[in-house]
Length: 274
Image 1 (tube, rainbow, N blue to C red):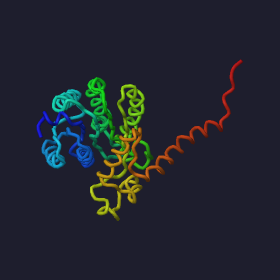
Image 2 (spheres, helix red, strand yellow):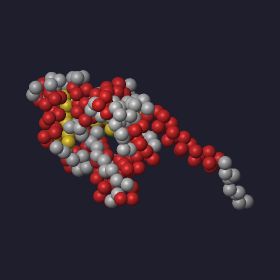
Image 3 (cartoon, one colour):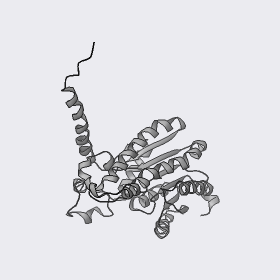
């Protein structure tokens, strides 16, 4: 399918497009008749993902992109609009992680993770947003966060930069959603839990991190997460939760926050000066 015919279809852009969830997102959008732009750092993996997505009968553009580079994200936006004439779904999905005890993390470790999860998302928003606003029509931005951004941090002590970046991403999404609503642009924050290629094959595995063990009875495959994402976009949800066990984790975390108010209210206010 060439660019001319492809330009008549809506388009979805997905960073981290060659990964487990990115590929599932692409297939889900392709089955809705959307052309696809896959962005990532490994050209071979991108093309392998593109071959699969093209089986759905849509046009696929692959663009090698380091999301931490503003210039490369600008180029991704330029190529996406040039090829398909519009972008209707922007999924800022690229991710990485560095697993270390907190005290062993270096400045470079923090920069590598925050550079992708936070700066990479900001680079994507600033690269695409001017044309998205001008374009009009059906537009939705999906930020790929995690239960790590809304749940219990103490279950993820080996994954501190990831947790911090996801909390920051959620704050960004909560600011973006009402800001972009007047422009007709939807914003959703996708927060999956443990997502694996084959949940059945992972039953009985001993998980090294408490956060993974929490979801051992609620493992989902990426297609299931992508399906929930489509439902969330259709309903214009702010938060999209695919893993039902996440509710208890968030409830426990919020209880810790509210405990701070309870503690404050048990303390008499300081005397005021006359």
